[in-house]
Image 1 (cartoon, one colour):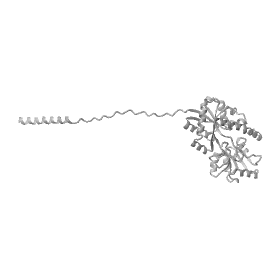
Image 2: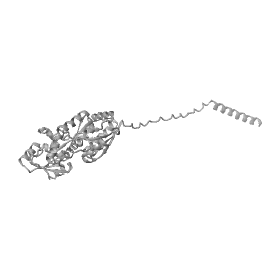
Image 3: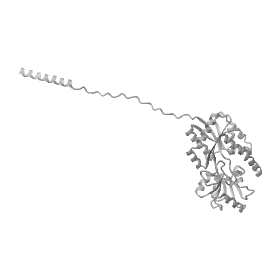
Image 4: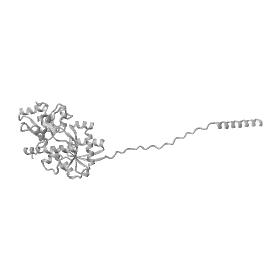
Length: 351
C-alpha cells in the first residue's frame, strides 16, 4: 500500500516537472506596442490680405443707373484682380454737381475720396452756372468707359431704322414729327439739335422725364422718334418694339451691343457725338502711388473679358484713356463744345 502511494506521488511529481519544462520552452508572447500618436500638424488658415489700397468713390447719381453700375462693376473687379477696395458712395443731386462739389471742396486729399465723373458735372454744369468748383479742382486718374445714347424711332415709323430716311421724312413732312427728348434745355437736348437742327428741320421737340419715359412714349407711339440710352433701347430693339437709327458715342463708332447701328459721325455730324465718358478723378495732392496704382489697374481691367461682357450688356463701351489722354479729351471738349453749348443756351433762352 505504501509502495503504491509512493509511486503515485512520484508520477505526479514527474508530470508537474514535465509541464513546467514544456511551459518554459514556449516562445514568449509578442507584445505589440501601440505607436505613439504624433501631434497633428496645425493647418495654417491663410487670412485674407489687407487690400493694397482702399478708397471711397463718390457717384453723383442714385443706385441702379449707368453711372452707379459702372462704378460697382469696376469696384468688384478691382478687389478681385488688384486688391484695391473701392467703396461706392451714392450722392445724388444737381446732375452730380453736389457730389463734385463735396469731393472738390469738403474733403482732404489724404482721405482717399475720389469722384466718378463725366463731362456733365465737370464741364457743362459749371460753364452754365457757377457751382462752387471747376474741373481745375480735380486731376484725372483715367477714363474707363462711356454710355452710348441712340436716336430711336417708334415701331412702324415710315423711315424704319434708317437715319437718312428719317431726316428726309422730316424734310418732306414739316411739323408732323414729334421728337421725345430727355428733358429740355440741357446737354442732351443740345446734342439732339446738333443732329437734327431745328432751323433746318421742322419738328416738335417734347422734353420728357428721362430715357425710361422716352422709351415708354416711343413704344406707346405717343412720339415718333426720341433720344435714349442704348441700355434702355436694346431690349426693345431686340423685341421689335423700337428701331435704333444712330448712336452718339464719342469714343467708338459702332458698339458691340448694336454693331449694325451707325454712329452720327458716319453721316458727317461729329458735333452730334455726346462727350459723356466716365472716369475717376482725384484731388491734387492725392498720393501719387495710389493714383498710379488705380490708373494701371483700370488699364488692365479695360481688357478683362468678363468685365467687357458685363459692360456690353449695359450698353456701355469700355475705352481706356490714361490720365494725360483724359485731360486732353476733356480740354478739347471744353475748348470746342462748351462755348457752343453756352451760346445755344443763350440763344434758346435757357441761360
